[in-house]
Length: 231
Image (tube, rainbow, N blue to C red; front, side):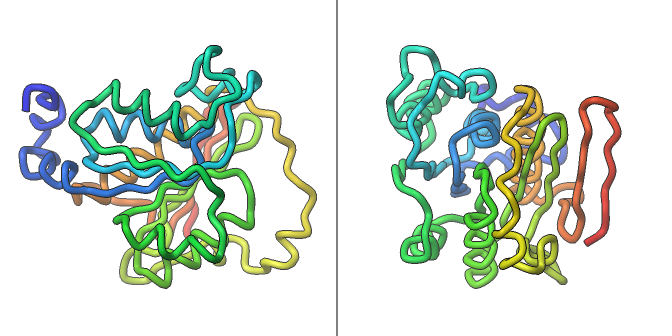
């Protein structure tokens, strides 16, 4: 347990919390800007099984913010490179890779094997799919999104009055018809938001603190203003 001594010494974690982390199974959908820091911190914390779902390859423009990857890995599948990095960080965990895109045929089957789903994706349709699947399967969905200097995080499908992604964007048809968001982003924005997603995941697993269920946390890194809104 020496490896995890700094967090085990926290009364909110302890040896009992570390055992919960070891037994936990977390699926990260999207191994990009958000998924990179989330995966690294969850692996470092000792989450026993991490799944990575992404069909994309590493591009040179990814390296500005997707800290799982190096120049030597450009052109390779992200999930394979990410798995190698996570196993190098922590050889005591299992990493499963799914080099395909989530769709209506595979989503529920894949999510059913995990305890929690972490959002590392970048489009509305996949988020609706994750939310609907997690709601049907009663699995917590840790949502995160970024643009520019701004980000937001929430925990859907969890608690006594679980909210879903549809509570944030009720009109799916209108939402999917919206223009694609500008993909401009400063590299630290996904680092901050992905780390908060990891923090919410750790709270869900270990059972400490207040998770962002029924709430939306927002941050603007230009002004360092952050708010928690009730959903």
